[in-house]
Amino acid sequence: MCGIVGYVGDKKAQDFLISGLKRLEYRGYDSAGIVTVSEKGKATLIRAKGKIAELEKKLAKNKRDDNVGIGHTRWATHGEPSEKNAHPHQAGSIYLVHNGIIENYKELKAELKEHDFKSETDTEVLAALINSFYKDGKHPLVNAVVQALKLVKGTYGIAVVSVLEPSELVVARSGSPLVIGVGNNETLVASDASALVGHTKRAIYLNDGEVALLTKNSIEIKTLNAEPVSAKVEEIETNLAAIQKGGYDHFLLKEIMEQPDSLRETLRGRVNAENGTVRLGGPGLSEAELRKIKHLIIVGCGTAYHAGLLAGYYIEKFTPEITIETVIASEYRYRDAYIPKDSVALIVSQSGETADTLACLREIKKQGIPTIGIVNAIGSTIAREVDGGTYVHVGPEISVASTKAFTSQVIAMVMFGLTIAQAKGVKSSILTPYIKEIAGLPEEIRKVLDGSVETVKKIAKDYAKYDHAIYLGRDVAYPAAMEGALKLKEVSYTDANAYAFGELKHGPLALVDDRFFEVALVPDGVLLEKSVSNVQEVLARGGHMIVVTNSDEFDLPVESVVKITTSMKLFAPLLMNLVMQLLAYYITVDKGYNVDQPRNLAKSVTVE
Ligand code: AGP
Image (cartoon, rainbow, N blue to C red; front, side):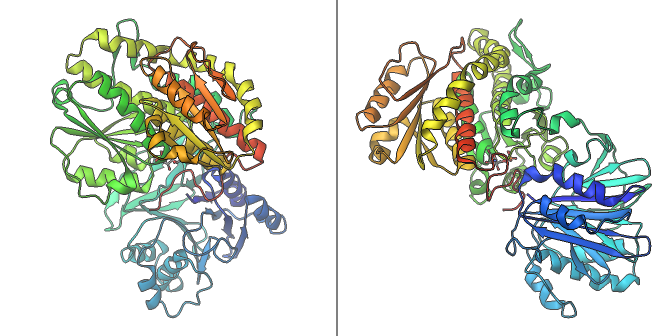
């Protein structure tokens, strides 16, 4: 997802713009740019293809003391990554940065004959449209922005400056997040609160359909229909340590290793192991409403989808007569799916901004189904549009590959399931084992991480050479295997796919040869023997297998075994997932790829 920053205040705008864009780098981008405007109305526009370091090289020769400006990191949608397509885009006296997609940009462009288009972007069309109403300052900038946005179809988060009004910044959003930082004699704006950390703790989250006129000591928010909006100032929860690497080589390893602590934050005040109860206040459903639930729809993309699949396996084990449907948001939003009454929808999203997931939320709400958010980013769009919700509180997840959020999303949803089961009167003898394991999980995660890092680091060296991988699991280990495959795929670019162990003989077994290595999850328990015989099927075809197991009985002569020592029975697959996270990390390090910002990917996909 692109990044936006903006500044108006007493300090040098260039300093905040660059530092703010660096905070947003983790979201993935392919070009960047800033523009500042002097008091006398002189603009200094600097743009570069590639990383912010390229921008800084140009900036060194263009230092300015200007006090207003905007900046952008671009993840190309319309138009290839290049300097001419990088934001900010200029039209007459104005400069604009934009996140989102202007769907009717072609029709709008056809009407803007006076503008000499230099880029292939939809954003430049928006800049030209605003300028067509601005008429070089005959109308206030904010009015020109409003008039233009009324003609726009699509999504946007924008920041606009004009050389004719050099002490103002105009921002607006519809579908792409913007947060305003309230400072002392300075007002900041960013597409993600992490850019504001260290500058201010006071934030205003703009809502869809709102436009704000910012100066260094005023913030005026209105709707597109000029209705005044009273700004709600909230506290930015995060701190600098949370968004820095803390001594690790990469955010990905930091976020894998901090899962004991991040899960503790998810559980805080919600699990009572002593009396074997779970209490989730956020969903906001009464005991009666919980008792009535007959159907759960769990909606997400990527890792969030896998979290929903895994949580669904657990919930149906301890909650009677509930059907559970876990769906991929980008598919579900276009289905004509019937939603039974007495349903509740869990909307799962780390960023809370994923376009497909947000679209599903809005569709499901139209059908009057209660929606519960399982979200990490405080104040995000999904978090603000659901009927109720449970923040997972894992802190900022910077690496594009989601790790700590996955573990906490699964447990948060399991806790929601336990909340339903408690309301339905399910015997405590069934629920208590889950609750006790959940309470003990952070410590078990610590033990497994400490006990497997060196083993996995060594194993990774033997498997980094492969371009293909098969991940295998049965029952609750199958969605865990899917997540493991996604992790390896998205950071190491290995062609990794997961299959249910039982599916092997229905086709995937044909793949097994020296091009592939296999990762097999073999949890202890009732299905152990079945999984062991599946491992034998692969072994018999010369498979290069890594088996991850917590069973003392496993003794087949596979190439590599990662033994997990744990008292956990129920949540062993979540512990196995830690091993797969580490495997993906170390294989990627061995391959020398960009661990935190994999090619082609973004941390939050706010476009379809
Ligand atoms: C996970 O490692 C990926 N980065 C990606 O699949 C991600 O889970 C997906 O885009 C959903 O993001 P969200 O949780 O922020 O909605």
